[in-house]
Length: 450
Image: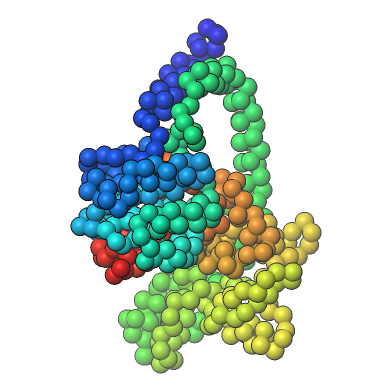
């Protein structure tokens, strides 16, 4: 044992034992009541227990009710946080600030007076699901509302309870934790060797995936470059104005950035920035075309689902993949006409070890590729039931191919993980009057007027 401890492992052991003691003496389980009503006080309480009732709002949820609710959440092992506040509590940025201060990925619900709302990290619960759950409990009494929301959220939420809550049903055995710590230290050398081999193998797989993906992305860049070459526009031509020149410049800049990002790509997830630029460039060209032809400027729409090289979509059309469920997908004019005639759309196929396949059946590396074109919010609905959609829903996907492609439950941080302030407020949504930043209605309006 002395030999093991002499190899630079004393500090990690001390750190681990400190964490053990923190868990053991964090306090009794159940709802925590703090005298502080500021965000820091709320966050400190939520890190210890899933339910916080402000002393000024204790009439809404009694102490026994709060303890029972907290036990229900802890027994389920899901990262659901419930806060009860008095009616006059300031609402501006409340959800974002509480989530930032607590620092744990999860579902956050707040009862404020007789109003109720919720937000969640999309890796735990999709935005639409949060909105539906909030709607389903509006108008109920405090105890019934909080219990009904909790029951439904626990049945839908992903992830795990944060370690700071301890184990369901009571405190952790100090003997068990200390024994586990010693075993971890003794076995550290072997575990490190296994981890190193696993990491090397994963890096090799990522490099191979990037090289296969590079062929497709280079085709995309080349196709966009050819569009620019065919464009019959000169900044100094008669009739050209500053707006047209700006559109043209944006398209050229996007093309150059796409080439630069691809040249610097090291992992499959780096490709997302490339396809984002190509999508931006093609939209700029569509705006330029409308200005030159005197048409109304087009609204921002995603590219054609079947092949982003077709350019921005013009409508949504119902499409059913072989063996899958119907769904609406954005389509270009040509593919909309083909679908209306009962013909197959012109699908982007890529090379795989099984021959040419649609990109959504070609492998996991196409998640970042599609994410750049379609944005995170669209992908789950577009890819449901496909091979790529199933892969992106796997918990390990983000470690290999990145995160942020939608509500697949595969973010870099899973529910219950400590992310601190490392989260995208735009990806923390749901509830009513969502202002895109996890705030109450975007302007301090709790629940969008409820």
